[in-house]
Image (cartoon, rainbow, N blue to C red; front, side, top):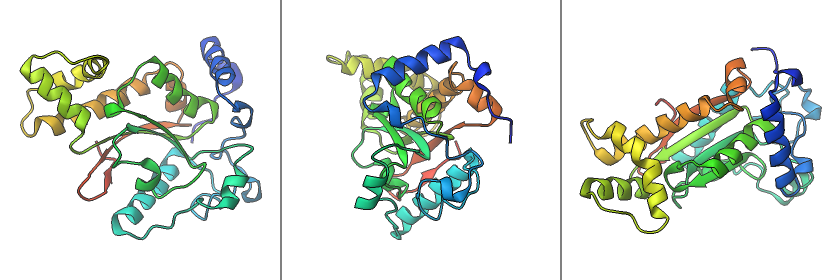
Length: 251
């Protein structure tokens, strides 16, 4: 694994953004504890569960395996419901060490904590219509990776996305979107254009294009890119099937 990014390597712009985000987040003093993916003795780790508290470093690859295992439990109906107790709530009240940041759609059928069979304090979750991005959302995603040093950032779209369906139908008809739905449509326009000429289902192609474009954008984010480059964090795309409950990370 690559060497850690030293404080001296963090850009002045990054430090400025970090200070701004920390100042603007309620209770942020408890968020910046040592990252779980450092080589930390088992007795110094928060008591997550057997998946994550055995003392081995929580690298991006290992966190991905933990999420994949949780998703398999969701698909097969063998849920463990880890970290969903009063004791866990009390344990993380003073500080959190999430495993991953998940940027996903607001769709009520795709709750990341359930999809990955995780619990309180395990995931930072950012949700917008079709995981559309803007400055505020970007700041929230940057916060999860940089401030609390989550080793994995998952961009998760899903089958039959309503926001994407709306955008595709509206753009195909050459119509205007009402009110702030225009912002959603404009944000999805690049994915629409990327998928427009592809064979197959236009909505599904646009969903997948939106995932890929968002991953690419986040990989080149000036704050996140150094973590990606050194292997301390990784951005990965994911596609959720409403029919089966399975998450496909191979995009």
